[in-house]
Length: 148
Image (tube, one colour):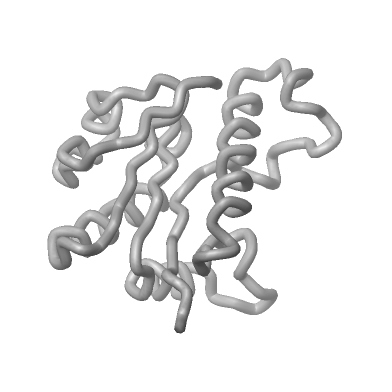
């Protein structure tokens, strides 16, 4: 039987994060937030990967792939998704596009699982201010993950 496919929408700018600097030693608040999201993302992948097929750009994009097309296919093919919503993610046009497709799919199929995770004290009113309001993400029970 095929594994359930879970798409993880996030923004952690891996290329900007210095791997040699431990999370606890990071002084720049923005880089610290990005590292926090990366830690959460990687832990989520670790927890899900034995029982689910995790669709994550960083892990499944190959050299030569047209990444926008591949991401859109994953958004259409996944069985569920997690939106890792941080202060940085809600400013990302890509995360907004992913959230738009995923909330639309949830409206089409009630069994489509979409879990918004509000990170670091993010509130729903911040989503509204960044253009997420029409998506009505606030009507979906969210996981609230405190921390950075």
